[in-house]
Image 1 (cartoon, rainbow, N blue to C red):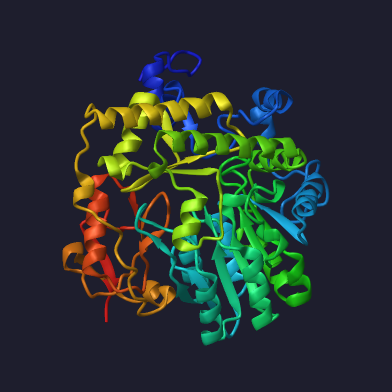
Image 2: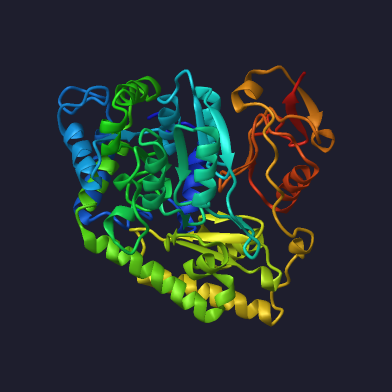
Length: 505
């Protein structure tokens, strides 16, 4: 390494090799990727020039700690307090916390705040992995409701309300957790669910992970917003809005004030216990800017219009390849769908989601939000415009043309995989499995044993198996297929992905 008299390295390539993560970030920037993934600001496109200039000019000065002249996260009394209060007012909730550990941390805070002598909760089995991490941290005992499965797109959608209500009555459950929307955009009628739960027991606490739906409140063409009906609501304003990655809103609904006010101080204390005492001021900056944007309804009308344009144009190419509300309503009775999640499936042409992701990135420089074995998702946000929307539509049109005329040769992955495996059975609680003694076994030899690990494809972050569930032959084959065909697997402590930790009896 050559260092000059000023202590700097002269060779830029050598300099970048000395900072490998920065090198990779610059490599991404230099490729001029067209982002249809988080964060929602889409490389700053949702920021007006005044605030862009502030960030460009004062980036390092703005990144500071909690000095009295600004405000403190632990006890805000100035600008941070006012900003959070304005968000609470806009969403119509009792209180909003800005969380800088993502909605993962918000989920852990929410569930940990509910711990008591009867710590049980009803949750969807296709919840985000952070919910299952929350169960391990909090010790809350879960009961599962299993989602409706779509055999055409091979996707787990949302829950059937009647199944939720039946479980609540059967188990006398006092706390219900719902993911709304799912990663793939399907929604439950949160208003109807809230009313029905109240009829069963007015004291049931409803928690909603609305991480992917922070925009719902601001246009009546979007699904219903949980802040109008639920007690605790989690949102990720960096997904479809303008906050920076790792930002989260944790809302306390007004209904909780009358229903169970004793929980509110516990939430407040858990926020302080689990949040960093050194919150990043740039994340708080971005959440305050998001608060500013929430006042402008035109932003959300444009968001809906661009998503609707993409859906309409792709249906013209081939209406079988795009997941729409009409399909979900007719097949599964799904109540609502978030149009900002554009789900494309080219299985009829033999192309897997992972192959489509690769083609889009390498040929068109389009980055998808998610690819799984069967689908890709394009995320439309407040940072998008019609030019990029048309570019996306034309790329899909060209790919379908190339497939029809055999210019693209699929790898026949989908001939080997027909559908996702059935959900495994829960034998012991996630926390019991996590704290138990364990041993390593070869994945191939783990059938019938209890997993001690949380194995997930990320994205979407829905666990294949969680601690406490019994490993099945189909689960083993599914994990192997994900590894073989391009899935991004997390959760194995064996980084070679050959062995899995199981509970030792």
